[in-house]
Image (cartoon, rainbow, N blue to C red; front, side, top):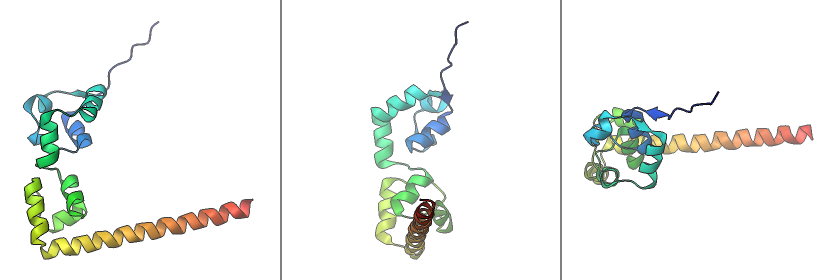
Length: 134
């Protein structure tokens, strides 16, 4: 008996998410097919022009928009941003500096500080527990 290994594939939506691009902006042949793990690796290692353009100019999916603006995805929704944005639109939003964006950035900064504080506290507890065991 010989073992037969199937090539793992993923839906275009999954591949687009892993590539950090908006699926609807990708070429039709990408949207209509399936993507193997080796094809995904090749796209990541040597991105074709369409992928380079999408990453540079957009439209970008919500996680990318949120990261570029320094807010959470929920913060985008609270700010009324529900559609993908281009890099140009993101830069315009940064320049305008609407009140919701400033508020969400402040909130995100506080969340990050709290996350660091909790991580440090847990590390201290782990170190004390380690010392007590020794």
